[in-house]
Image 1: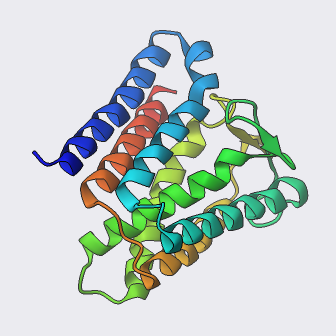
Image 2: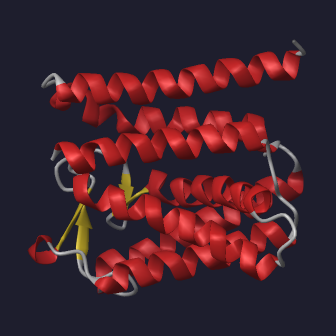
Length: 213
């Protein structure tokens, strides 16, 4: 096993450890202990992404920061003015907030865009960038659909009247499409194995609690 493969194996093991521990712990009634530590989980995923996508290179880092900032300010406009996603507010379990939005939310936009862009190229290697971006955006939308069900329970965010509007899903898809297109155009594509594990781990986590709640 090469050093790179060893690092990837450790990263994947750590990823699953956090997600499975969360599922078990919350199911056993320790939600109040696990959920405030969500920001730690996101930082672990960020570390794995840095490893898998060589985010220390200038181009990769610049585009990751760009997408994270764009995603963050889209959320700022959403939270403060009701733009794009509907009327909603963030809770207290996603870490430090600026202008009503957790700083990690912008980073999460960057992470999910990187992950889904890579998956899209593997799913449809012969399609154009526009169709690949469509697939990547669809993958992000699927994940968001399942996240929305448990978000209020975990004090992540909550929509007005506890109803997720159609505009939220339309906006999610639109921003995801743009971000995927940017990454695909500049060929910022990381390790497929790690991207797949990040996506599947998060999808399983939120599908489980979609059913659980």
